[in-house]
Image (cartoon, rainbow, N blue to C red; front, side):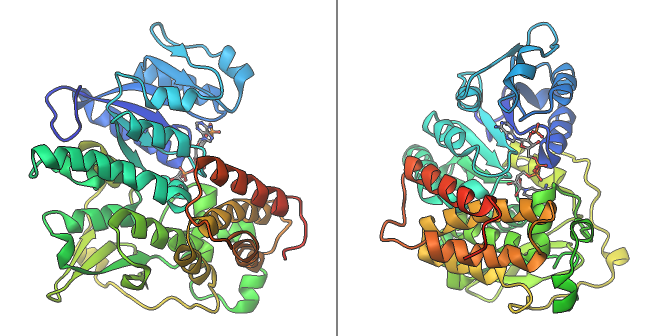
Length: 409
Ligand SMILES: NC(=O)c1ccc[n+]([C@@H]2O[C@H](COP(=O)([O-])OP(=O)(O)OC[C@H]3O[C@@H](n4cnc5c(N)ncnc54)[C@H](OP(=O)(O)O)[C@@H]3O)[C@@H](O)[C@H]2O)c1
């Protein structure tokens, strides 16, 4: 097997969610890496034409289109590429014996089972997806720690002796923290500092927020992303999810994770160490860089992302987030403190509320109201570490409650 981190043979990749914003950029990165990478398996939800085009470019062994079985059966694929059908297609792709690394670019929790199965099978997982960690961090991280522990027992200095080498973050903030932590001991970490652009409504009044339209909310000032995460950036729910994600990835308590608004999106996040030293990673807002770093770690290769130009940037501004106009950040942090039932309720409600905002059946402040209501109503309970089945059932309950247009309560 070719283990990413010891590149002697091509890294063999399965890409889940190839049709989205991250997925399409991942395809470009994987092609750009040339012979260092071999893409073995590709899946997207429903975009049959795009999947056919990607299959022609990548020549994978297998593709899957789980969101449209009829279109999957009619796919026009190059010789040597076949379709994997059935409800477990993503798990099958992620656990193939010829896959070393699984790139996860799907939204929501659709990749929870494939990620768990991939780690169980000893694959490296590089994930842009944050919802899986927010809901299932208690299930995912122990597997990454177990894999790292077995390497550390043999060769403690191996790059794969760290859980982050097995569960690699692609989210730019978490990649920045990961890169800032390189060569550091966990005992030296004092605080994590996540930066946020502040989104399109950074200086909006409460009245303007109440009247915010989807069109305006989708106009992100610095990043070009999928619709769901762009709305999450506008409410700051995205930053709240990232606080929970950081808690799981870096094993740091909620009181030691700060959020700072940084409108230029040049400083992608930072780590404060116990001696007062602050390390940050800087870059242009281009996801191709963190995608590539997660694939090639610990090596660095030239990337298509333009480097930051400090002279052109000229100034870097920082300010505190406003908890009154953007309550979703506090609601997500509170949910994280309660536990994984609460965060599962949070992300299920968020997906529904964002969908309803986009279809015009919920106003912008209604997104945060829905999150608060869902965490209060469904997040309670002694068992804050649900198993996979409980988590999936809870997710479905929350969606059914808020998707119907029922009043938020
Ligand atoms: N976009 C960014 O810059 C960015 C940055 C940091 C983190 N993230 C995170 O990355 C994840 C993806 O974000 P995105 O913006 O790329 O979302 P997106 O544009 O909505 O793409 C998600 C993709 O997942 C695919 N998908 C859905 N169900 C699937 C299934 N059952 N099997 C295979 N593929 C399936 C969809 O395929 P079809 O379109 O074919 O239906 C879609 O193309 C999210 O968790 C987000 O928070 C994104």
